[in-house]
Amino acid sequence: MPLMPETNPTVPADMSLYKAVREGLRNRPGDQPLPTEGGESVQDALIQHILSHPRLGAGAHALAAKIGERRSLGIQRYGRPLQTFNGRDAVQDLMDELLDGATYAMQVKMEIDSFNTRIARALSRHTADETGQCRACKVPLPCETRQILTSKKQPPEPELKITKVEPVQEVVCSPDAVDEIRRRFGVTEAQTGIPNIGELMGFPVYVDDDLPPGTVRLQPSTPKQ
Ligand SMILES: [Zn+2]
Image 1 (cartoon, rainbow, N blue to C red):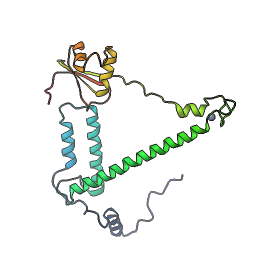
Image 2: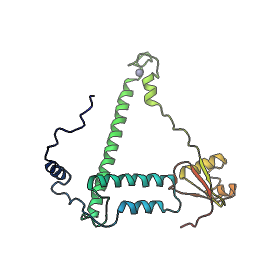
Image 3: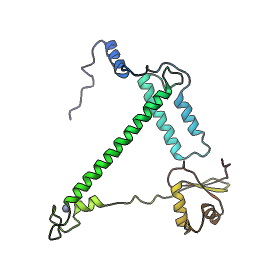
Image 4: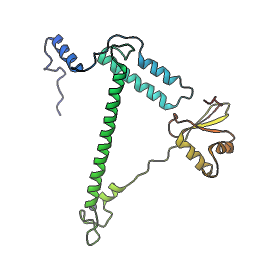
């Protein structure tokens, strides 16, 4: 595809008109007013709130960075981050975003369903004919297409990421790592509960839902809520 020229020829020389049209596109009838200068930065407060979590997982930093990106986008679009008392009804904004979120979730589901239907249809063409060969490829089954469509490649087992913080008094791990710890110590769930596995290692084991997959932390004991 040829590169587009840098300048957009449809932008009128009168930039104030251009700006007015852009404003009009961003703020249509029935919309809430565009945000006005308000109070505190909500994204800064949210980032601070996330990073002040006492047991910070690696995911928390990634999440904080994503919120920082949304903040930059807001500044680009509206000249300011999301602020308190910005002239908009925050509950209405929340409701609108949740409805959009539910709609996108439905779109994902529909696209996955459609994808699965297409795979099923393709598979039905790569079945045995009266001689036992693939009726589409004319080779013994399973043909290459059938193999690809039915392959269930398991993702590689995650390596445990073990961090040790002295003095070690407890083990905290992500939910998936509990099974991995059980497996490595040869303990079944029926034989022992999670605390007993900890005793095998000399420490109690706690599961932290916020830790990223495959994380194990040997750390000083922390007060439990
Ligand atoms: Zn085939």
